[in-house]
Amino acid sequence: MKKREVQNNKLRILRTKGAIYLLFAVFMIQGLNTSSAHAMISIKANHEDIKIDFFYHGSTVIFSGEADEGTDLVIKVASPDSHQIMKKKGKVGGLLWMTVGTVKFEQTPSLYHIHSTKALDDILGAEEQQKYVIGYPALRKHAEIVPVIDEADKNHWLNEFVMFQEQMRLYTVSAGKIIATPLGNGRQRYSITTEWPYQAAPGNYTATIYAVKDRKVLDLAATKISVEQTGIVEMLSTMAKNRAALYGILSVGIALAAGFGVGILFRKGGGSH
Image (cartoon, rainbow, N blue to C red):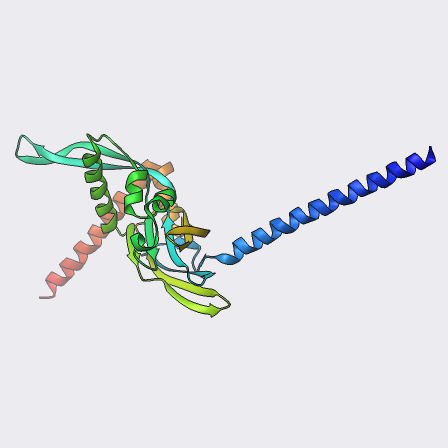
């Protein structure tokens, strides 16, 4: 009886040790996979918290990090997908240009900047571009537009939308501006200096770096950028949303005071001649 109990205890100990070794092996494998994934590519921004104050007129943001040598790089800076509207202009009665309707754009970011070491079509396949929504052709397939008559009409309005966003400096695609420097041991350091447009609304944005080889994305990493109003700009914005009447009175008062001041300056100028 005692012999059988001893054998059972030994069996339990062996099972326990086996489970411990198995868990240890799993954790080691996961740790190796995690460390290698994080070691392959990284990204950071010199300004991750952009403040909009009274004197704000955009910012300069530098993205940098490390990646495996021999891989091409693509950086996408974008806001979350949003709902946007464009007014449709047309001739009424064959004479006057007027607003004749609206076009609604769904699943389109308000800011969309793409930078790559080489032209996108030279380093990344069409399926990969669509999978990660990289480049204007992929964005066109990703977006939804209403109302449209057919695919040609959709492409027309998307082209108009992209052109307008580019004029506002909210959309851009560039190639060859990412600077990469070898570090040795099969690694490279990269950086790119970008201009953050003042037209970009307050909110949260994501900058993603993609490591590309053989026309496929091998790995990616991301960092967040926050844009928020501060000081008098934040106060006026909050007032406009929550106390519209007071904001209107204040705006009229400031306009009248400015006009009165300019009038005095002109009268003084006129009297001096």
